[in-house]
Length: 136
Image (tube, one colour):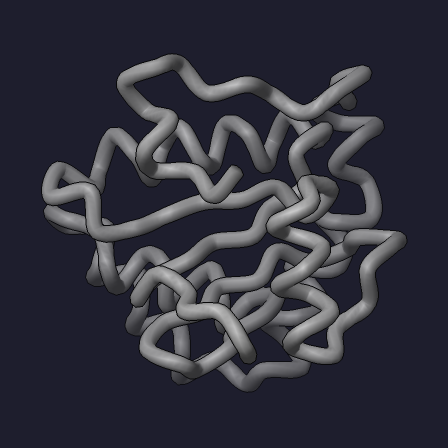
């Protein structure tokens, strides 16, 4: 990539209520503010996706970039949990579950996330105090 990315970056579906709730959860459990965020639909999110050679439409996974490694689907979720404070990092133990099974469950939730949790008309706008945690 031509531009330097934050060390730990989560790209998420900015119109998905489940995804936005997950971002709020991560922020609440990342007291050192090590994780940075960008919606997949934002200009910055789209640039990162293009730079990584990933699809820029039809979002069915968030992307977690950590130290140059790119994680998607269940692996991304587990690696994010591993980087949180408190007992949430213990959830990383599920990495031993075979990836096809983990991704099947992830894909099922992803497929029905709008139906089950709803969809926003537009991406959220972070509060001024959280703005520094988002690529804009």
